Length: 573
Image (cartoon, rainbow, N blue to C red; front, side):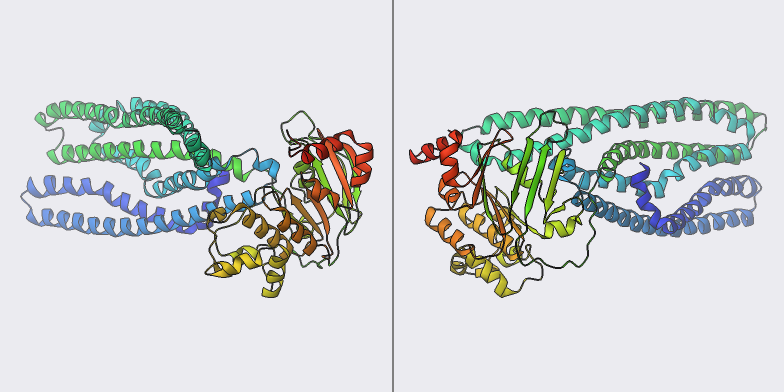
């Protein structure tokens, strides 16, 4: 929890001021029963209205001071809590931005969303309750016990007889509460993950009439969360009844003993009333403990989960002014092997080849051959397990990673667009891009004319992930965005699969004169024929490399691809 709550230290003076105000509020509350005793013993029983009014005036003045201190304590508590929560959310988000794909694979998106929202909220609650009752509750209990001894030692002693039992019960409850609420947070992750998967696959679910099946699966997942929540809340709610039982038992003992003491005039009525007041304040302090334990156990589980994110390894980015490359870059793999984190099998084995500057280089292979894995190593989405990768004859690990990625324009298999206008999406390629550069890139990507057909043209809102655009439009916009970046290496990962032959041909012709090294993953022989060279992968290894004509002569696997497509099939068939 230390890693999480160190973000509150930035506001330590506000927190300290809030705690001082809380102590003022508490001090006044602990003195009030003494004023009540004074009203009874020195005012009413002594028939002294002057003393009675004095103590009543002190009670009213104390109440006013307590009220004002409480108001300002709440103000400072709210400010510190929300500022802490804001800083923590920003820290988590920045940390996630620094994750490599390998680190990101250890967390799924649903659990990261829960940690960024629900878990931060639980931590905020603990900070707020800490400023309001973390010290207040124990000090109220201890202060009330101490003051009851000041009023009358015998009554104070009998008031404390059952208190140790209550402390043991609270410790046991806190222990089991922490475990159950940790499990509840994991259940919430499961709910979020299930819901996200369901939404992303809604079309498939409806086509296959799986709505009832998915609903039943969700009911089971939600039912597990419900059962744990019921158990956890019942456990926490048991605190108050047990608390009242023990405290009322202590109070009955005090009243029983006080009866004999009053008859023998060993105590005064005011003293008994004061001790009863302290007993009620102790009861209030212990009831605060019940809420504090709930908040602390949930916050402990949440803080542990947040710490997993904040302590996960990240890639450090050093932003500097780099000279933009205006020509293509060479890319060379030297005996590169790679396996994913926690996997035992190599996804790539002993890969060696070199792509020359401005070369049109195509990578082919069956699904799962390692094509996407290979190109992801170039911008260091992952680091090679063995071997060396060079860009412009320099090891990519020696490049500043920001500069390296500035050299690479990457268009993934699944075209990704962001909420906003088409123009804003283009600026992802280069935040300072001029209109002419954007128009030139969209024309090369064969999407400019389609954009002009929209009512709002470049101001058209694409929606989340470009939901209202066709697959081909999304792919062409993604390619245009990469071209806006003016990269030295352009990686197209099967990024023209939704384009018809005519549009794809026009696209290749348009970017033919662009000085950029093209690395294209494709399944289309028509695209491969136009390449300078073709790399054929098979189960993570190089099967063959050469021009189309060379592979036709020497590669049996390549000929199978050619034959399958000439017969109207596909390689994966």
